[in-house]
Image (cartoon, rainbow, N blue to C red; front, side):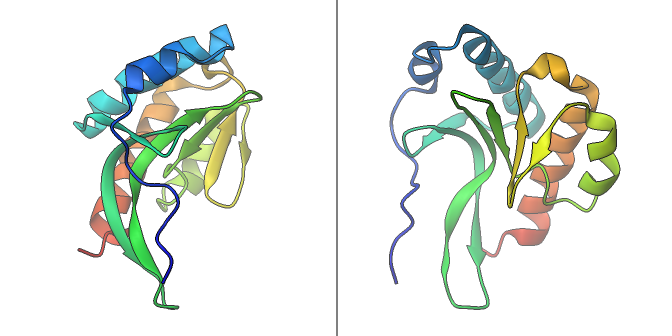
Length: 140
């Protein structure tokens, strides 16, 4: 079976964030770095070239495909901030309407800037998303 393309790297998270061109996304990236570090108790690790991840979990699908991924994380993209692992928790359905301006994808939450969302609700989504991934989805 093919190995996942997105693997942890030794690239410095701080150097990656410092190189983000868009000033607001760079600023938001450093804020998310501190927020996710504080909430998860994990140090940030670069996953692939553009995802800042916290903690890791092992998954195994019914198809037999398995691998490892960041439990929660983010990527400061050109058009938005992509947040990973926050919509997996059953609490996400309750919290999303309270979050503020956002979009959702298959496994991502997208925000244009942190000023568009309620940081308290975002913190709760990080907390519940991380806990759910580590306790319910993780298959060691």
